[in-house]
Length: 378
Image 1: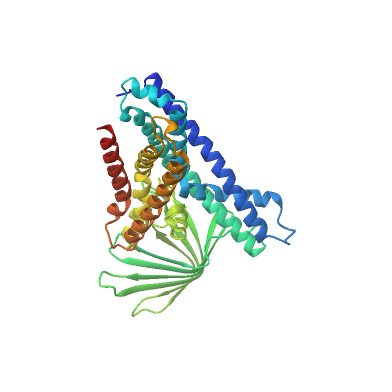
Image 2 (image 1 turned 120 degrees about the horizontal axis):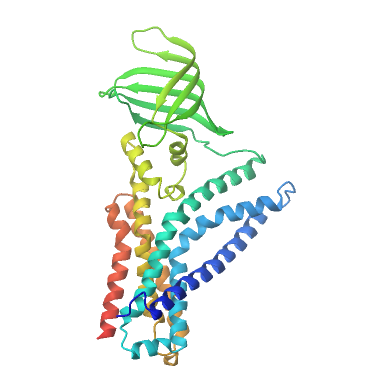
């Protein structure tokens, strides 16, 4: 078997990386063109929207879209790599030298494993951040306010456990982030005991959230600065205060995560988000599935390489049917994608275990592809 660090192994590794970057650039350019056409149609007749705003919007939306089609990008780039190998008769020479099909596939698989790991570790956090920018720009476009900052128009509901065994339910009718300060309107805090009996009810006209440092390595905690406060307790007269500091486990990042899709949360922030919502009693299925999907992404991309090899690795292009094989390969890729989406839907709705919904596509694809390769080798 060919060693990945050999001259031929390094050549295939570099070709896989370069072809991936080429296909990524082409598809990104196509996506940006279509996005630009769409946004131009939306702002038709609005002279206050400048070209700089449109470019910002298209660039901010790009990572989110590319993140969804990365399996196709890997598959197409791999097919190009293998097609060039076959067209130049390099594949025939490699096989004649006694290198098995696995020796040809291994450097490309390692290249895609590197791409997938890099994508999850570095590109995904950028995509999550750009999603926030895109949502803000979209909100400014709909409100005609160039300085508006979208945070939430559906209010806040948070349930968290306190150190004394009580449970606090925090509700706010609206949120707004201004100059790095989060403002909450019409805040209501209900504290209940283990038997769900109400112990205290706090109402405030407005509140700001201040983040405080912890002595531990945990995420930052928060401090709600309540204004115009009314405190109600059973058997006691209502207490009215001008202000009240209320400690909480929430912070700005956790509230942001509450209002965005799991796809918009960084890979590195997902474990903390999952732990927080699990302790708060919220469903973590979507967040857990997203986290496991990102872990499985490099292996899914490697499975796509195996599929691409089935349709593009040929001893000679003279065998004909190249176009048909490429079309069949792309069609197979779409079939794999839509099948994985269906399986993911079952996982989201808890019809099947989350881990099965995440790993099943990659395992099934890889198993079938390996079986075909083994049969061809024989």
